[in-house]
Amino acid sequence: MAVRNGSLLGRLAALFASVLVVFSCESTSGESSGGETHFLTHCVPGSDSCGSKLSCLCGVCTAPCSQRAACERFAAAECVPPTCTDSREAGYCDVSCFVEADCAALSSAHHCENGVCRAGSSVLNDGGAGSSGGGASDASAGASSAGASGACVRGDVTANEVLVIGDAFLASSHQVTAYLEDLARSSGAISSGDRYRDNSRLMANGLALGGNGIAAQYTSAASDAAVKVVIMNGGGADILLGSCDTPDAACPAIAAAAAAANDLFAKMAADGIDQVVYVFYPDPLDEGVRAKMDALRPLIESACNSSPVPCHWLDLRPTFRGLYSSYIQLDGLNPTAAGSQASAAAIWKVMQDACIAQ
Image: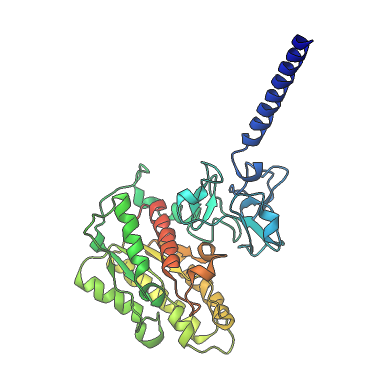
């Protein structure tokens, strides 16, 4: 009788062990969050590349949501507003990041792209992931700097030939430049003692308003020493200090800022500047300022895209999305230390993708 009981117990133990193995294999078969291997993979809207449980929203495979609870099955995901204008959803699940390691919870294939985790190849779509913050369009626009072979030419731009110009978003603490230099040093692009030239200012920093202050920053630096790469922002001071009857392209302050940007790009091209990275603001917290910013943004983006000097557009809204409480100062406009670090990471990503000052 004892032998029979022992045999039965042995068979039950073996069966239990096999069940554990099956459950273990099932729980690890999908490396990505919630078992959805397509989560946050780039996609083309209208395609079936996201599988049966996810949708292609704003150029990425994700799940629609209206509250945080709908995203709990995905590691570190939040419910965020859509970044594209054609989305009919209230929001979708997304994961923010500072560095590559922040995306490790999703899978080894996910990487930090302009403040959000993504996998797969970036694709262009109407207002989606590829066009909002230095994605595929920026990388392809800068491909010429990598040479005909496609290999990035390194060491052909010194730290002193990289110029930062702009307004208070960059100049309030100059931390964006400091963090950017740290990233360049970590990658070996500049040495430990090298610095970029940062001419951004708290005052006299408009594109057109108050005497073309940003153009003056550039002219002063170019007269002192050779400049090959310009990292800049601009337009914020113009809309803050300029008045508009209606916040649209016809507003004199907005139109003048866009015209001044075109003029500055033309001057840079004539001077032989190699590359420009134009960093455009996250959304201001004040609704009135945000309305003017929304009117200015497409005009400056168009000027960058049609610029005679290669210009790489970086919209910081995706980087700051869902993180304004920690990324933006109480003034509702300028970045905190964390916001400056995230901005620098987004800029450096564009520079790496386009082989700028590497």
